[in-house]
Length: 583
Image 1 (tube, rainbow, N blue to C red):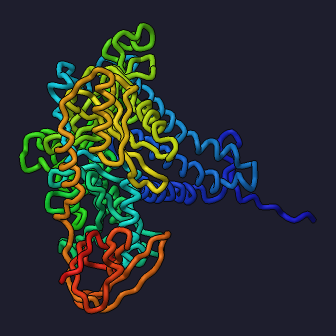
Image 2: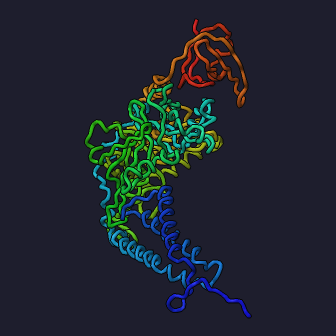
Image 3: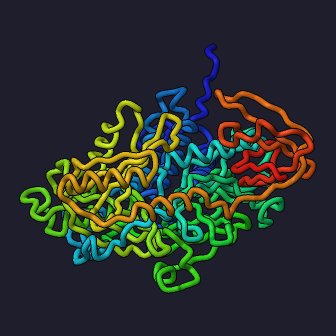
């Protein structure tokens, strides 16, 4: 007799074969999708806001998780007989996904530039009535930044490398913020963990401080915010942290519906660290016309969050230390909308009458305790010349356009590189200066180590005028001489420029003074330089002095009294900025 065969599956309508325990498996799929939603939300951190594409991507991820679980629990992977059942169960979530896609598509149309070109052109208001010579003050080299981001980063790495107790655990963060600090241009950045193991070791205490780079004096220092330094405490909330102390997650859980821009690191006039997180909005339709409507200021040490509107930042004098809530990328994007579409959508693509677009790069200038983003402006033909430039206040979004014809920034950089081609130096992105009424590109010339070796000036309108020099004063002297040779007469006090340059380079008001009696001297040759390591009776650290920078160190003996200056007095080995034997 043949054995009795028992079929544990069920036949549904139209003969669709069902797996056993369909109710339980349905619950598993739903619970699995909910768990997946929670985990994906924790790491993806989308805003619960209908104006955010990230929200719809997250919903799509949840539907995808549900569909995968449906396929797995249906048994169709092991037996194709269950495929019709799996397809049937997949119909509702697929319909939901289709509805979401349809809604996104319908909402996108009112945000499309094709239909809303005029609205895009009005996101930023640009004043074109100003004149370069009337509105831009003549240069003061006491406040002109001579470094770019790469050079500032190289200095920051060297500074951290001099601190043996820090360099073994931390790295220099890659996001530098340009600020005005005590009326001088600085770039500041936080630290990052060296690797996952160093994070595990240090995350409970956080980061001991941050790095700031003076863009004028080329001096970088590690500022300790912990009890050994300013006494504020360790930085515990950062874009380089993880889990609950990860900055975006910390802010997102407090403000789940906000559209958040890219966070930037800043310090106030006391050196206290904060994170600025722009609160964005879509001003054209549902998805278009990104703008900033406010800012969340996050205490980097305690995590406390304070919210301000853009109007608060503009009108409140106590908030004038805030240097930027609008990013350079956003401002360039908004200006391009203005320049492209002020004459309408078809004008940009056909006649191109009056169309203006920003050039490839941008830089920063400090004016009246505010930071301005500026970029050259060229015509729609994208030729090698600018027709003007635009400057935008990064705190208030006040924008001014100045009509100046001449060379584009990268053309000026090429000219400067060519003038010093034997040295193979590379020019920084230019800063636009008013030198006795002449719009002038100013650049620092960097070697392969990103150290400033020389300077270059290129006249914007007469860009065949290219001058270089080992000092700013020398470069200026040659620049004036070349202008005169081209029948352009300007009135410049080179001696005052030299005094300003020397004053800036010798500014040591922020340095620590270290005095004591020498108890030990050691020497080493590093990269061809003789370096003396000096220990004092007043400190546990060794102070490193390069003989090339302080010749008298070679006659130093134990028992001598010395006076030195350095960025810090904390650490095992401290690089000295100035050295003197006290008699």
